[in-house]
Amino acid sequence: MADMRSKLNELYSLEQLSNKNTIIHKIHPMIKIIVTIVYIVCLLMKNRYDLFGLAVFLFYPIIVMALAEIPYKMIFKRTLVTLPFVFFAGIGSLIFDREEVILASGVVVTTGVLAFFVLHVRTILSVSAVLLLVSTTKFSDLTEQLGRMHVPTFMIHLMEMIYRYITVLVEEASVMMTAYRLRNPKYKYPHIKHMGTFVGHLFLRSMDRAERIYCAMKCRAYGKDVMKNTKSTENTESTEITEITESTESVESIESTESGDSMKDMLKIENLTVKYPDGKLAVDNFSLSVESGKKVALVGANGAGKSTLMLAIEGLLEGEGSIFVDGMVLNKENLADIRQRVGMVFQNPDDQLFMANIYDDIAFGPRNMGLDEESVRYRVEDRLKLLGISNLRDKTALKMSGGEKRMAAMATVLAMKPSVMLLDEPTAFLDPKARRTLINVLNTLPHTMLIATHDLAFAKEVCEHVVVMKEGRVFAEGSCVDILYDEKLMDEGGLESIR
Image (cartoon, rainbow, N blue to C red; front, side, top):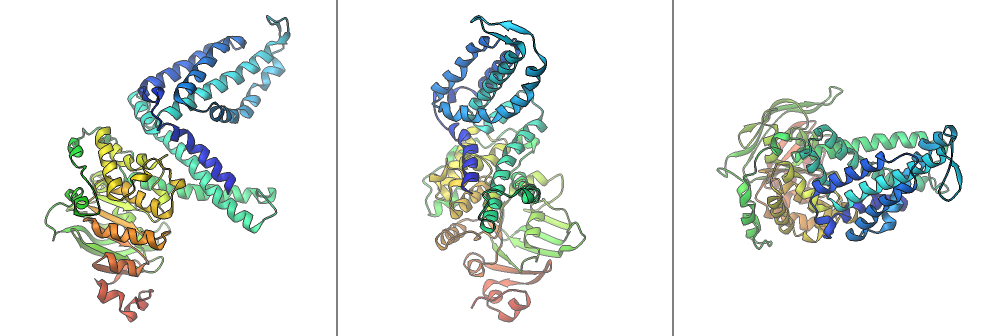
């Protein structure tokens, strides 16, 4: 577990370096990208036998590392990872390129040896240049500038997905390795006879996790080019930042998200039916209306359809029936607008924290909406202060507690300025103190909320109304006092009443 975690920390460490404020970090990302490309092209254009001619190329990474205050050892250690691959790629030169040459020092070598070592030096220098680019430029800035350079959108998206998938793979492997060692303490790594099954399950688990992360990205306007091309009209964001405390001032900074008459239905579901791929009903003819500003608890046994219902409201699952958000019907034409109006906090906060630091995680949605960087900064700072987590601004999710992750995940959703919030098991992974903090925060927010939970005491403290789901249907609904204390009704719904 420690080995895997250290690898994951190493993976994030380079991007953490991009938060520095050196002279190299201040250079415009486009200039750094162009310089890196020119440097690598010049490397590749050098004669494949000119080993000593590469000496001049050593100055670039050395100077950049010195000015950017990046440890030489860190970059060098990561370039060594490529050497085994380069060795096998260049071994053909040693075997087939046998022409002899005399070096200036009088040493006789074959051209194959020169080509072999030139390939290694080129690779080390090229990889170093890319690593320096990543460690001095934020990943979001890199992808933005690549888009301006007319790099195909699908390639940029693919690069983002690969970057995140590597971290998912390492995280899942660390969990599996821990479980394996507990049951096989004499083995540090999976035995050869278990390796096939281990690797197979690892990829299945990581693919499932990657799918959940992708869903969280789509909920925050990811991939909506129409949004990115929309000119921001949010320049008034700068006026939003005030002294935000736990008073009503913090509520006012986001109260504009709740539009219209407080008594109108902000969320309305009519005869919704959603089926699993095998044809089994997950949600069966479900109808519900939630007034603006109301908080409604959604309770039910495992498999009752709570999470599926929320995914359908977010437009991540298709079904039959109608869903309206603030009077707007959910369909393909309105999907982008609906996802701006409806924010979902997933059960596992790790699924929503996929950037190198919390600032970029919160900024992910506003950037996808096309806001300028100044507006993004104000919106992020506002949400950090609102939830009292400004100290987490530059942290990675790896170094945070369950409660901190939960608050950070909520901040990523609030940054989208939703009218409706969907929360799936928000008290999961929380200790009593973090749970109490969450209750206080939710009671402060003015948003319309639908909260799926097994924590009935939590539901009673936060929500006015409760809906009991059973086998995908509305089994019962009413006030929390009337429903949650009804022992017979709750037992029939597969739950226990509050005692």
